[in-house]
View (cartoon, rainbow, N blue to C red):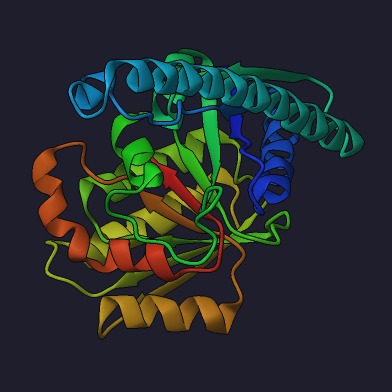
Length: 283
């Protein structure tokens, strides 16, 4: 696990994603792998055109479509190479020593899965090219990445800055405990102030687990600011992160089970969709 897969697509967030990837690569002393995935544009099926128009006209149109597809592919390839080269120059200017780049003709999820065996972290923009105005988690590429990839994922927003603190929303569940272990073993969040926050819920022995988690983080060397809150979970977490001006949110990943979709009308989903902070999802 030696590479920081950093997904660059030419969107408004590409520079911020690159900055975040450089931060992670430098912090972990790993190779920055710049990835641009080009999805094939959908064209009308030739089968759907059969019998719709005359043979001669149909043949001419199909030839023209094939020519346009070829031209589009060449332009996309050239643009993709330019995007990667610009990102490489930016990363080098930020002090990144080990940089690789790859251009893939596939969807972003497929491309990441192909490269995941050697990945330490995946860095991706909150919004992709052509989707700068709104974001819904369900059905998005980010949801697919989180569900199908087993590597930690850093979701980047606009105007990324290197974080000095992070908030871990601990709820006492297995995913939260796994996230804590990732933090203790990972190194990415070392030397950052940890805001350990729990909102009272129905998990058994939550207070005890909360105190144990706080002790583990302190033992590892983290400066910990621990808060046990009450009230609506989403509202309490939102109020806390604004009051304390935390730089980064950290959460355990969603379950890979399809049944987990039932729970995505939850506080986790709201946090992902509404936060303007970078979000680190730990598996």
